[in-house]
Amino acid sequence: MSLADVSVIMPAYNNAQTIARALASVAAQTLPPRQVVVVDDGSIDGTADLAESCRPRLGATELVVIRQVNQGAGAARNRALAAASATFVAFLDADDEWLPDKIRVSLDFLADPEIVYVSHDVLVREGDGRETVRDCARHFAQAGDPFLALSVRGFVGTSTVVARRQAVLDAGGFEPSLRAAQDHDLWLRLARTGRFRVFPGALMRYHINPSGITADVARRRHCSYAVLRRHLPAMRARPGGWRAALTRAVILHVEAAAAFRRQGRWGKALGELVRIGPALASVVWWLATMRADH
Image 1 (cartoon, one colour):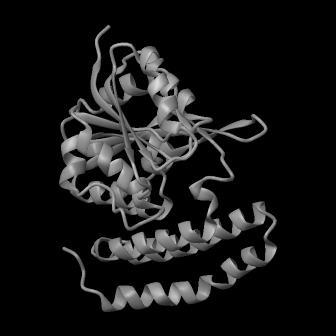
Image 2 (cartoon, rainbow, N blue to C red):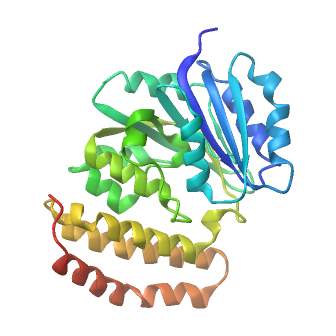
């Protein structure tokens, strides 16, 4: 069987219960990758050993397992990128899984040399087994300016992305100081320098994990604001940029309020809604006083 010129980038932290499932989905690809790089980011539950045990299942696909002290998902992905050797890199978190045609279909779209990365729809599985499709391609298709649309909606999920490795390296990789939303930051940086494509069809299954990093609502909102501020100059320089920035600020608080509500933390949810007004004032101030990035 031929192997795709793809390195899979898989950070893992205490994913002993899910990493075999993730690696099995790599092994089940109709066009398997030639390399998988797993970076165990200081796990204490035997995650790395379980990854090693999956080596026979991967067949001709090279498996590289790296262990490091805990530094966060961004640093773990950067470590994996440094060890990757293929032309393309495909990102897969250790608690997600791909559908079998993921790599093959993604590479079909990357045949266009002007596209630096591709993404697609997501199949979301709730804890009770119910599944829904997150229609990410619709947001992309309706976008007049894909960069601004991505800035506002954040519709590119990490485990959906296949990218040109050199483009990711040239962009500086993931920002390790961000403990959340570092993926959104990178997709925006890449979108500022090249074209990207979000195509229809759910080729990744995202498992809702209440104990995961995305469950830390306040941290994710804080980091998302940091990403927004990083990209405000580029947004400001584009038609509709002010509106996009203000809309993003509202969305961050509404999403945080919804997350707190799902957790039954009604006071926190109300607090997020109350913060919308001051947040908009802050964004207006930032936009009015910063230099546009041309």
